[in-house]
Structures are given as C-alpha cells and as structure tokens.
Length: 252
Image 1 (tube, rainbow, N blue to C red):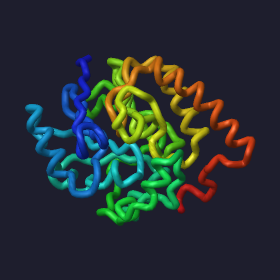
Image 2: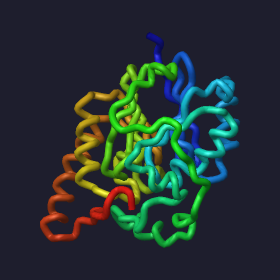
Image 3: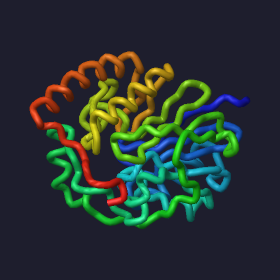
Image 4: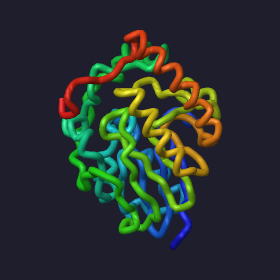
C-alpha cells in the first residue's frame, strides 16, 4: 500500500475554485474546473513533476459547471477516462447545470443572476459511470469514491487511506473561499438536509482533513460544530416552509 498525497490545483484565484491532484502509485485528478481551464490544470500537473499523460482517471464530484466545465478538454489533453455519478448524467450530457439554482444564502442569490452561471459548456459522457462506493485501487490510488448526495443528486467525495476527504461542494469556506478556515455552505444546494446528512456520514469516518472546491482545507472538528448549528438553522427554515429543495426528477 502506498501513501496518498493531495495537491490543490486552483483554477480561479488562490483557492476560489479548486481542482485536486491525488498522488499514489499513479496520479488521479479530482474535478475539472470551469470551462477553458483544461490547459491550466494540465500545466499545473506538470509543474508538480507529474507527466499529465500518466493520469489514470479524472473524477468529477458533481454536475456544476465550475467542477466539470473542462472535463472533455482535460480528457483530450491527458487521454484519461472520466468518472461521474449516474444521478448527474443529465448535466454532464447537456453541458449545463441543473436549474434553477437553489441558493443557500445571499451569495447564491447574487451568483444565480450571473450570466456565467447559465452558460452551456462542452458535454462529457463519463467513461466510468458511478452508482455506489467505488475503489480507486485499480487506478493507482488507495482511496474510495463515496456517494455524498445533496449538493446535487450525483455528488461524490473521495476518501483516501490517509484520511483525506476531497469533498467537492459538500462544504465550503465562507464567501467562496475568501474567508479561509471557516466552514460554510457553497452558494447552492439541491437538497440541504440530504447534503448535511452526507456530510455527517463522512465526518463519522473520521477524516483528517476536508479538501473542498472553494477555499482551503477544513478541520473536521470545526466542520462538525458548524454542522450542528446548520442542522438547527435548516430545521427552523423547514418548519416555516422556507427551505429550498429540488423536487423534480433527477434526470430533468
């Protein structure tokens, strides 16, 4: 068994939008960033001393365009297959996030008005279709892809043997990573209560760190305390009939 290492590869700002390089016996990329960032990710892989042609797999954590926007481009550049969950096939095949966006707060309310959130990107058909927990051992990394639905129906996280959780948008840093170290919701969730349940399931596995799509790595204990407060807030919203949740079928 080889140790695994997590290297963030930001595609916007210092850590506003992150992709990740996971190093084991072979390298794996988690997430493909915004549209047009494939070459930037490719170059960052090389800057870390890894031949991009050695990439064994590109794992997409979910079907939002800041996470799969360059998946097709990155597949062409590296030759690596793409893995994505079946429940997010609609966005991957359309090249468009499932809409309308359901904001988690003021940041999401502002962002959903941006034209950049509503573009259509290059479509991608996953080569590896995920439906449940999946080992990455055959791809050279001692890690598991874990379904973590809620942010989207097909959201997944990657848990390594070293206790690193690459969590996509399961949780974020405040204000799209501008305030680092402070757990917060990302701008949108399709099902906030289901996402919180997924987060608790991952915390129960006692990860050492949570590497997220927006911001720097988060401390699990701090995330756990935040999750307790967030549960109380969500139940209050639900009791008032003000909790936004997606109700249409997953394939829509």
